[in-house]
Length: 120
Image (cartoon, rainbow, N blue to C red):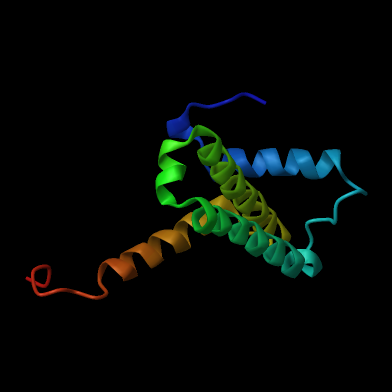
């Protein structure tokens, strides 16, 4: 698989990579079907908890300053994103559909919680 630059890395490449893994481990891993979406979500939450554990145990500064802690933290975030992409596949959510809803939510949030200095 051709690797893109960091500025181009996104959901399309992540989903291709996840589908490649799913194909390689077909029969060993649970399939990415709607009936397994709940399991994938629970696994994603566990991985997010593992990332939170690193912050709790090592502290935010160590994630910034210690190469091994930083690598471990990013690896846990990667696990979160891998399961996130599996969830998208389980429910047949396209990158385009996700992008559209993400942008709608962003725009909605941009209008929320207007402070006095931004409400002009």
